[in-house]
Length: 424
Image (cartoon, rainbow, N blue to C red; front, top):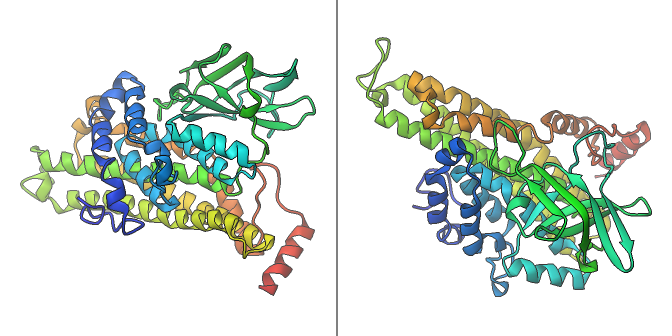
């Protein structure tokens, strides 16, 4: 069935269902054993392999490169569907799609061509930015040094989501000049150790644990020419989380409906001869599905803003101020979506139990995984900072693009922003 026929609304483009059709049987296969994997802590190596074989990881590449030329709204719509199958898998490919955007936006033609070729060949990328411990915000204890014409990386990363399944780790390190560098580290290189030691109560199959680099030699072509990530990176990575949450809500609504439809036992205080005929139970089912619908719609609306930011990068008719505005407003739209989607999904994955009896708490049903996964995802990049930035813009017209915790803009910056806003 099409997206529309399933009641989730029309896809983000006229061709969306044709684009999604080859992947939907794979999504169904991934979903089939999602509960068993969660219970047994079985990492989704096979499932990610299926996506790779189906060229899902090449979605954004042009057709002549073996991709589908997917737009950002199309990509995020597919990530919602994948999240409904298993949000662990969506999170595991987050870094890969983010790196693909980085490649598209890089101004070094030779480096861009090299990595597009590797992605087109089916190679995938995991994350290696964060570090545990007391490193200062934005600082890196991981080092990158040049020795006898070779580059050597040493250090330890955490939250290395997807790297255990990938060919490369996209890692950050500090060079001899104290500058941040980004480098691609082969996961099979000598001195690389990746450990599945992430012990979160949710998203437990993303392999978001430790990666160690012990005198790992990397080729100069693996060093990214410019350290900054693509201009709409913050919004992109956050929106993958929102797509994952929307997928979780969709899976929760489907599971709930199936459990209610098959439930035989009723309560003395009930309003029907079956759970499926009880209007109060149906109300709960409706509320959960409503939340899933709204979360998906909000996510795809924000994806349109990211597409505008992407297009602005390559629009030669725009000046730098217009490009910056497109980037900033895309960040704002994503931030405006974070708490709304989070609240919808956390509430939906809680109230679903109101429509069922105590048997719904059986671990074998796996209904608790929806809340656990949603709570874990929504703990990334705390929403309080998104709310603060949205409030700051609403009051002063300033979009704070600093990292959370760095501080708010100065009075002079506020005054300049207000003047600019009045000019517009």
